[in-house]
Length: 89
Image (cartoon, rainbow, N blue to C red):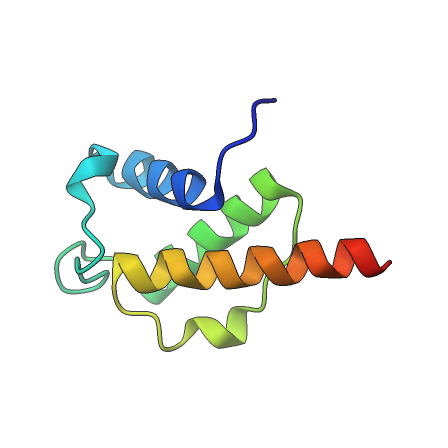
């Protein structure tokens, strides 16, 4: 499997889920208002990325995420934390 930065993984997964091109998803794009994603949609996206990455993320910190940029930042933080946990184990 080829390595992809977490941002690419998230953007590509979201684009596939929404049947859009990744470059259409600007950081300022609102998840619920513009993309019409529900909380369940976002949680399912997180679970899918977790599976792709082989990591577990904190869903409680997801509550404040409202834009594509915030979602990518959420995944970057969660990915870093998961990597740090793996290194310390």
